[in-house]
Image (tube, rainbow, N blue to C red; front, side, top):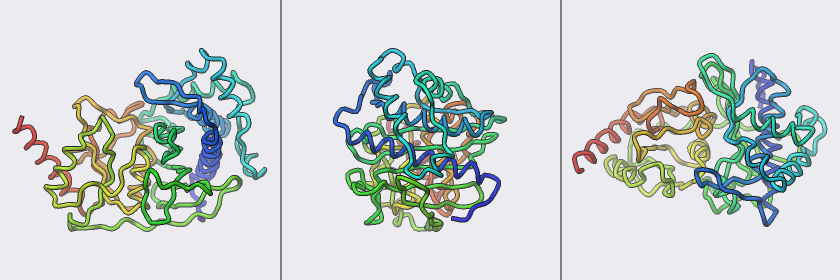
Amino acid sequence: MDYSGPYAKELELACLTVQRATLLTKKLLEAVDKGTLGKSDDSPVTIADFAAQALIIGAIHNAFPDDEFVGEEDSTALRQDETLLERTWELASTSRLDDEASESLLYAPQSREEMLEIIDLGAKGQCTPRSRAWVLDPVDGTATFMKNQQYAVCLSLVENGQQKIGVLGGPNLNLEDGRIQEEVTDQDGYGHQVLAVVGEGAWIRKMSTGSLLPATKLDPVAQIMDPSEIQFVDCSAATSSNFELHARVAKRLGAPWPPRADLWAAQLRYVAIAIGGCHVLIKVPRKTSYRSKIWDHSGGMLIAQELGVTVTDLSGNPVDCSLGRTLAGCYGMVVAPASIHGRIVEAIRDTMEESDDDE
């Protein structure tokens, strides 16, 4: 790719640090015991989450010390478990790019205590209308990561509440048949990286162990008009969204169901729209109080939008990325080509009203 715009430095650094973090996760996949512990919400977390967050924030913070960070992890568990701390430090301190020129652009923590402090930068940050914040999910899809299936390393730049850069690394992405499947993984290489800059479009590249490989510009998504052509991406195992109601929306539209892609990692559902033959993602929460974490969507939303996709809440309102650590003003999601987005919003509204009448 040939990008020399105002975010050129940020983009190069983001792509390199995501690539280095994906190599870290691949290294851990070779281990039998991945150092798992339980989070308060009972989702699994591994030393890869901690070590990847340390490397990503360390590199960006060194280059942009005034920026904020919004990350999923904090260092509490590591401070309470010496064995876990040592394993995380070993992973973070030995994961480097093979290319010296590329690695020289990236900083890494120099001690265990610095690593812990860097991790905690992510736990303290907020996205506000006047902040410049890097939003990251070091391992999106930890449950599937533990099975050596699909997962993503995610980083985005949000400036004054607006997404500017999005970089998603899929270390196991195998695109040989033009779709993304949990069990069909890249076992010989290092997957793919999908990236976008606001107003400039989106690209894809293969990842390597060294310097960044050439990137190819992605074509815009098809602006379909006929609902029968829709290919959904969803997650049948998600407990936060109403998969059964999603099926009723598809039936009302006359769209094929079940979804073409069934993916656990939230960010990879955006990748499935960008490169995996899917068109539409909807999320109707089971609880009216549910709000998504910003790191599950920031960056992926930008990639989709740069390819001609409209991203809104269930009422068709734009998503606000300036409300802290969640998408606090966004109830549910509708992600679809602009040509058919309005019809999907209407179908969801009618289906939800029908569901309320049935109760």
